[in-house]
Length: 234
Image (cartoon, rainbow, N blue to C red; front, side, top):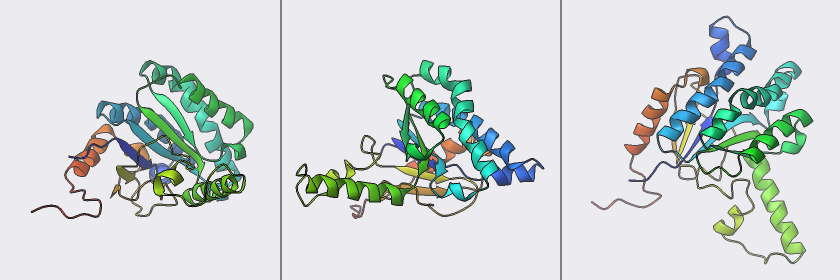
């Protein structure tokens, strides 16, 4: 049986969840931020070692300035409210994405959380913020080309070598990708890393993604036959 070590989640449906309750979209984003703590604890209890959450994509800048501004404040809310508990539980905060484009205050909150937790060896809670897989892969290609031009690397590279140029170089491949909110697309998320991941698209919006729903998804994962392109012996 293949262990479910790395779960990645596209946290979708916050706005629709809020609209269904007659609330502004910001109420959905706030509920979604609170749910990160709940799901992180549940993932840890299920033995998941890496939990990668799609917090903000490179395409999300297209949203209204007010909504983007609100989203940029949520890391301060999340870590202001839950950081001490995360530290006590041994969680390590990791970051992927182009942090340089974030507001200075947002970037500082994220980097401080990562630095404060860097010695922890429990759940790796990975926040993908201003992240896009196309951007990541292009950066990796350009970095590799620059290393070749400077004589730091030889021309010709295998998969393992290329992965060392990715933002996720310290993480194992994704075992299970979950998208909440009913949509069935990947949205430029971890395209390299999910090559052989199991995919689950579920109707529950992110604020309704409970520990029970996570367990259901993980149980579904363990019920699948992962062959990685091979054929199971009969």
